[in-house]
Amino acid sequence: MESNLLKYIAQLTETTRGSNQLFLGASPRASIGILMAAKALAAINGRDFVTPEDIKESLSPILKHRLILTPEKEIEGITVDQIIDEIIEQVEIPR
Image (cartoon, rainbow, N blue to C red; front, side):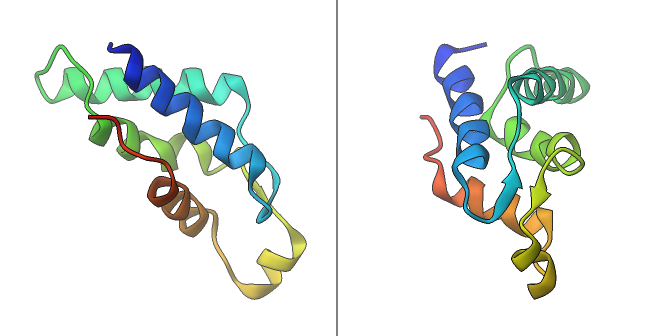
């Protein structure tokens, strides 16, 4: 796996920890889960390399139960998936 993709995973999880919409962000262990899931997706799709799309596709299943919204966002009806989508938009995709 390319180092820029590892940095991408780290940036995504770090962004969750800095989000004012989340009471609790993703841990370093979540980063490992994203990495393993992205590798598995690549293998399932017949590739021996991971793409940024594999990482993005892995985020929701890995992070959904780990992220805790702030009470205000829960009241507003915001979902964790919406926050994950926003984080994907915020972090620059490596080229």
